[in-house]
Amino acid sequence: MPDTPTEHQQALLREIDHELMQLDHLPELSDQRYHETHDTFEAASNQRAMILEWLDGWAATSLEVERAEVLSVGCGGGTMDLQIVETLMGHCGSLALAGVDPNPLHTRAFADCFADRVAEVTVATSPFEEYETDHRFDVIHFIHCLYYFEDLEQSLKRALTMLKPSGKMLVLNAPNGLLNHLAHRIWKRQWNRTAWYTEDILPIVRRTERPVQVDRLDAWVDVTSSLDESSEHGRLILDFIVQAETSRLPARLQELLRDYLDAIARSEDGRRLAPHPVDAIAV
Ligand SMILES: C[S@@+](CC[C@H](N)C(=O)[O-])C[C@H]1O[C@@H](n2cnc3c(N)ncnc32)[C@H](O)[C@@H]1O
Image 1: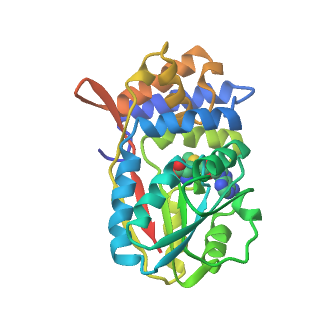
Image 2 (image 1 turned 45 degrees about the vertical axis):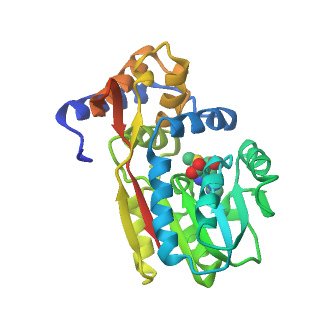
């Protein structure tokens, strides 16, 4: 499916913009709500499975250490890192894991997740921009977190200085595609700037003159329940997609958000699947 909206989709986006401009206040996601919605959203998508398959292939050719020291930036609650660790352990003898995330609910869940699983695990509650460490890593990954960063270029360059000489930086990030056009608008309204997408990241990593590999993974997310206004499950997914507490938005805006989701989705086996691509960037 193309990334450029059709005329119908563009008309809906214009109406959404108009409605957003009328709002005095944007009900952004609290730390608590973000934590509740994130895993439900991911569970409705095949994207994590595709990322893990890609990572397995990448590690088979590029992870050349017996003991891997890994930093997960924007680590979230640990659900994804558990699977990442399992995947990487298929290609190295042992692994030490550090996580960093500003959301204390996430870092608490992350610590609980790994308590009995990885011998060497540390986690810091902080934005990456303020994270201090003397460690040097074999792998630093940014999975779906760069959208939120203040200074993208500075953070990516800083991460490169935290790598061992043979270390690799991995970025898994969405392009500015059809699904993200919703969150994009909320962020623009909220911060007066948009989130960072692949289109912003690639020029920066290319300027480092290091070899860069980019693969597009064409995943989908099942939005069937989000089209039903009475579904709590659907509300969790919609809130994460839009990055706002949608039940606190005017009814007309909520309706437009559902119409837009429906307009970008395709039907398969009685489900409505919206495109949920991710770019895998290895530096
Ligand atoms: C979509 S979640 C991804 C979590 C995890 N990487 C995963 O793939 O499941 C984005 C995460 O980025 C974190 N984040 C936001 N701003 C950040 C920053 N400045 N530094 C580090 N992490 C940040 C959020 O708290 C959130 O946990």
